[in-house]
Structure formats: structure tokens, C-alpha cells
Amino acid sequence: EAQVTQNPRYLITVTGKKLTVTCSQNMNHEYMSWYRQDPGLGLRQIYYSMNVEVTDKGDVPEGYKVSRKEKRNFPLILESPSPNQTSLYFCASSLSSRNAYEQYFGPGTRLTVT
Amino acid sequence: AQSVTQLGSHVSVSEGALVLLRCNYSSSVPPYLFWYVQYPNQGLQLLLKYTSAATLVKGINGFEAEFKKSETSFHLTKPSAHMSDAAEYFCAVSGMFSGGYNKLIFGAGTRLAVHP
Image (cartoon, rainbow over all chains, first blue to last red; front, top):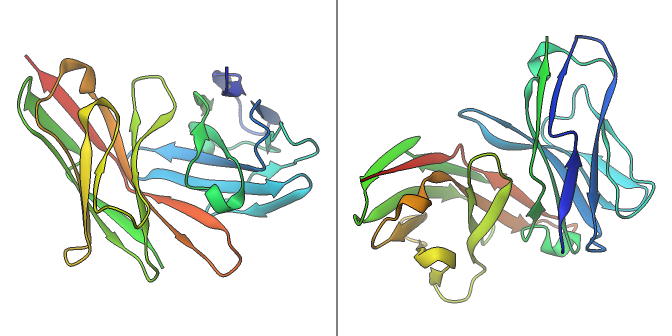
């Protein structure tokens, strides 16, 4: 089954404790992206990757890092989480950057930073 | 610059009634427009898309949307609401940039409630 998976689905952590949210897709997609969803703000892009070893900032990249060492994986790293990063996070992928609008979304990761 | 405005953060309808979710966009390039649906505790699912072909677009689950350039609108409709339509709906705009990168800009979302 074609899908985007994220782990963990739920995470409660404390300020400053480094964490990684994994994202994996099995569709051989070139383009991958991370979004955060906050009430009243919709989804905002954090980082995106157009292919292996090619990443760039989205609209709200501060406090986040990403890497794309393999085509299928695109982990989101929070080096020193803060309470304002409490949010619902979505990973998404699409066939290529030219089809970035046809994005397939993961189930989401709900992060709480205390 | 591109942006999306969804009018009404919450919409409530009776089962069997018309569903109308409003979306207005702003775009400096010919837009591609989309509606995504998010069911509780799930990711986003593409409902329908407009990519410069027919202005009336039909999607899944009986939804459709009409692109109206003069009104810069892309409202989502369904003739008869079903309880299973209760979800959050996001309108999004995309456009080709010079580098060929196609980015999605989302609206704030509209939560649809359907009551018996």
C-alpha cells in the first residue's frame, strides 16, 4: 500500500531535549516536505526537499533541521525544543517538485513540549 | 505573492442540506487550486483540484468546486451533507515559480459539523 508513515504519532517532551520525528514514504517520490498545523493558521511549511541531499527552508524553519540521505526518508530534528513548537506535524511527499501540489500526507505527529 | 482566505472557521449544517465552504485566493500567477479534507486524527486527503482545465471540478465523495477568476474564488459545495462529511477542510493555492518549484499555500481551514 502506497503511504507516508510518521513516528511517533504522539510525543510529550521537555524543553531542550533533542528529538527526531521520522518520515518515510514507499512511493519513490522525489519531493518531501514538513508542515506544522496550528489552530487558525492552517498548515505552514517548515522545510522541503526536492531530492536526495537537496533541502531548503520553508516559511517557518526556525528551530528545526532536516536531512535527506535516502530518497524514502526525511526526518525532522528539533535540536532544542521549546514550548512554541508544540504543534501537529505532517510529513508529505509527491512524485517531483513539478507535482508538488499532488501531495500525499502522513497521519501526523502531535508534539507537546513542556 | 499568493494567499488563501477561507471564510468561516466553523460551518454547521443539517444532514441532507447543502454544504458551501468558501475560499478566496490571491495569486500573481495563474493559480492551481485545491481542496483537502482532514478527518479526525488523520492526515490530509486531496478532495479535488483545479489545474487550468475545466472550471467546474468534481472530486471525491460528491464534492465539487468552481473556479471563478472574476471573483478570485474557489468555493466547495456538496448538494446533500452526510454525517460522514464532518471534518476540517483546507483550501490551498499553488503556482509555478521560475525555478519550477510548485509550492502549496494553505488557508486556515474550515471545520464542518453535520447534525441530524
